[in-house]
Length: 189
Length: 317
Image (cartoon, rainbow over all chains, first blue to last red; front, side, top):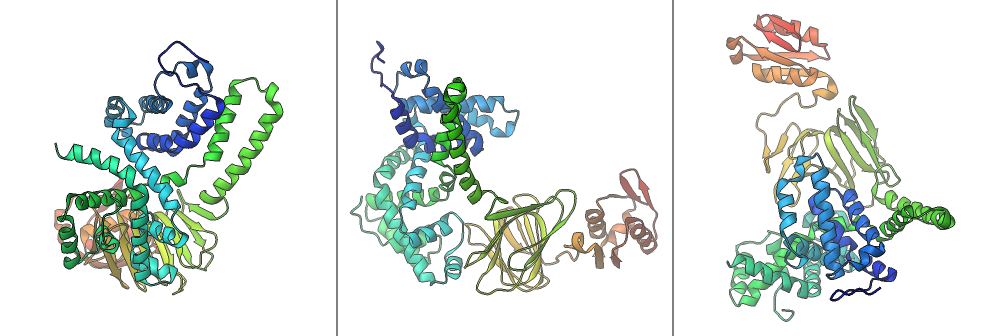
């Protein structure tokens, strides 16, 4: 389906599935940062994907599809926040949502992407190493407690966490570098 | 950046905030060697703090949500044409969501939940530990305990009587705190998310804050309070911490205001004291499961004042 606009990506059904696998989690967690409700966030992003099947919708996309998805999710979140009687969903969030023009300069989106890369990298750690790292960072247990539960030495726990750090650092190098530059830009002005 | 030399252990001990003076200095000195080193440390701090936010990704089931999207699409087109297909999608959807729910929803299989509203409740866990819940409280616990520990989550107030098992420490997650025990009885009150009170009847309990170095050890008769992000041992713990459970109040040289507060909490009433002289009084008296009227009568005799129930308030003259 070609139109006469500049560059239009032809989106097949198969492509939609690819886009889903690549972006769904990030978009959902991104939405969740504003809506603070995972169920709702999932619904919002699902609806955006459902709309993608609509032929009229598909041919009217002028930016990259990722950009389109990002904008659609943002707009949908805005609508949800406006509709909700619940004021505790933060006035500032609405202002924030409407200001960031593209996902490339959206801090929160960048942060979500980092978290996703991190999540994937953590799940690729060797079993014992991963378990220990999660008990420490996600469950909030300290080194001694982890050692007690797993019936291993505290030194082993510490070594495993250090190993995890090394592995994650190497895996995430490119992503972090990109963020680093942003961090430096924002913090040296 | 991959070629930078760093002692990962040194990095870890500093990120975990467990570094001694020597280790802190070593890190600072390493950072000052080059700007790449500095950058690396900043990156690692970023990574370290972001790690705790990754849990939410675990809750997203791509397969399930993809099916949901397909179902939503079908809803838009006439169902008749896709009859069989629709039924198949629904079946698969149910199967997948069952697994998803099994693993994450209390009461569905692995985990159970007991919740109270207007009345109290009791529950016995797989290891024989007994827990009494006060009103408006919630406890989430596994049907079977793992090999290494026994972990439950509490919101509200409960009294724990834990079966001793040194190989499996018992841990309660309550608000922002973790309470660890070996085998003892104690009360935990966590009414708002940011405040938790633990009082120990027997045994020893470790009371600590998640993701933070703060920890205190509580022994029999001691009470710990987590409030405003501070963990403290209370000097004059309230003797009537678990009156909700025993139905009794016990006062020994207790300041008058405190006596009124404890009665208010147990009987869900409100006092208005119009007699300023009484504020300096210290009372010694026990109310063993009395009803409110008896309590008020006894109180009247003791303080030699006039107590009158007026609509929602009890007035002392």
